[in-house]
Image (spheres, rainbow, N blue to C red):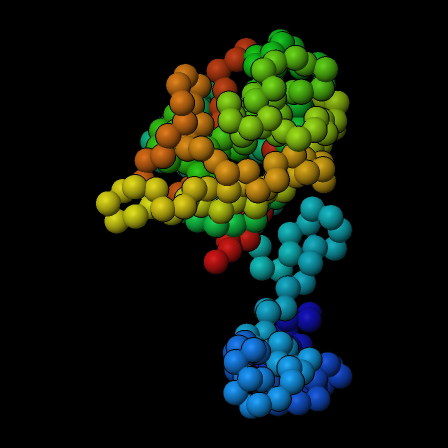
Length: 277
Ligand code: MG
């Protein structure tokens, strides 16, 4: 209700802040250049030289508890339907089974991706390795969150999903890794049967008009609220064989991997995203 409260008031920024007891002076419209301002006025710098009041950050109502979507989130999977998703292969409606608020991988149907495309964002997603998982290494509960799906199959940038609870594999391929580029800082894995969370900040790569890379992608990720990727500079799309490389792209869907290993399928729930500037 906070959002409505403030929007109904529709006060100018300075007025709203005065109401809250936070401001006593008219607000400048943009950040001043403090040194120049003080010098031009022929006086010593003052505290207010470096204080500004607009633009006012939007009010967002946080989720009631950790993991619940804030008021400005786009819910990609809230537990009831897959309206935000399509099959990767032919863009038909997503066919993965939904039951009891949980989405489970259908390996035969193949991967799914969002209908919407995104650039920079904050993502929350929860996943669970089933009790009784079988296999070892990469063949044990393998899936993945492609932070940008740049094409069919595994094209894109994969944040690995795997059972990494007492399961040895190459470290830059375990859960929380940027696949074959960056191992997680720590292994924060819960055992099979328990829900895991990923919270991700994705900064998309930017390309020049001629297709060359202007700025790389960056990823920060938390696994079960533990930092596992700290503003990692992504080297390009994640490759099973060969070196990562960048190919120009714009806004992209987010993709969930249907990995071909024979272990029982994993599940997802509570997926939401906040597009960022
Ligand atoms: Mg994977």
